[in-house]
Structures are given as structure tokens and as C-alpha cells.
Amino acid sequence: MITAAQMRAARALLGMDQRQLADAAGISLPTIQRMEGSDGQVRGNVDSLVKVVEALERAGVELINEGAVSADGGRGVRLKEKSQSSAGEGE
Image (cartoon, rainbow, N blue to C red; front, side, top):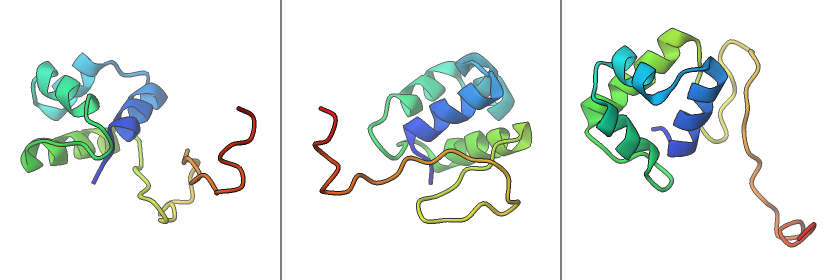
């Protein structure tokens, strides 16, 4: 549904701190902290995840899933999957 990196990036784009996101989503600050501390996909109560996603969307962020196209054609940020040939470049 959402990754910890997406949550942090969405907050950064909005200029929102963890407390502001917690308030907007109607959940506790420690819950946001646990979610953002997850590896990969955010782990947590489904209801809390939905509240976070809805709060970010209300604030103006569209979460783009892997391989998906932006529905409104707006700007977005997505990490490209590293190819085998470029994985060792620049290190």
C-alpha cells in the first residue's frame, strides 16, 4: 500500500513533520514513527494506514505505486529499479 520511504518523501514534499501528519490522520505520533521506521512496506493496523494515505492525499500528495501512472498527470518522484549493469557503477 505505502512504503516508509514514500511516507517520508510525501511529508517532505508537503513540508509536514511527523506530528502534523499524525494530527491530520487522527492517529498518534508514535504510530507514525513506527510506520516510518518500517523496512519497505509500512506495517501497521490497516485502519491507521488508510488514515495516513487519506491525510496525505487530502494535503495534495498522490502516491504512485510501482509501475503505475499518475492519474492527474502531475509531477511525481519515483526511484528507478537498479539494472544489473549499473548496480556497481559509481561506487
